[in-house]
Length: 297
Image (tube, rainbow, N blue to C red; front, side, top):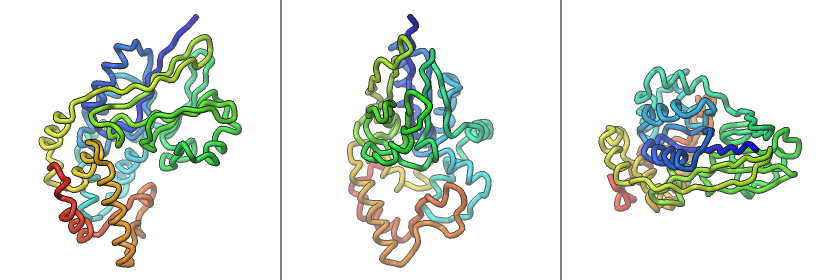
């Protein structure tokens, strides 16, 4: 009887410190293989280190919307001067040429089979890296499972806690968020899939501790705070038990743009950047002044 353990890791967002601990935990749990569901980089500024860890452990790797942002920027070099956009430029400039070419070659979804068990893995949905399949999106989930030629659909992208459920006699798994979860402080989330006797016998949600102080010090040393402290503070707050701050900040930025009659999506945007929200610098800076009492950096 063949038993296989597969680690499903998604939404690392450049948190190499969290990923290192996850890989140790997976090894200690005798994992046989690894699947990465995208959003590998582009949030915390440790992209190269993160990608090197991934490339050493698996060839079953997807790109997410965060990779696509960098790929699209490489193609068109948008001349957007907004403070907020400088974060993406920093991430782009941080990546080595080899790692940039690597993420360009990654697929959007993949069919994987272990001893007759078929998995369809995707970042957002089988249709788009940008599409969000939340646990309560029953219509969308039904759409993608009604004629699914696989035993399981495995996704990420939403940053929800791990969930799994059967729809149309197919297993749907959201593997949570490894690197920037808004639900856990100093804990990385991933899934171990147990396959035995040609069946998925268990979906195990793993929570792994990592050192937030090390993340903070590494952010400081990276140089990204010289580019835009605001977005990095919002991200760190979200990871550090104050996810409501980032959510409220961006919601208010949307309202203020609407009040000014301004668009949050650029008319000249192409590709996935059509979904990338940009706020005017005066709004960005005025909100940062108001929320600075919550900022760490």
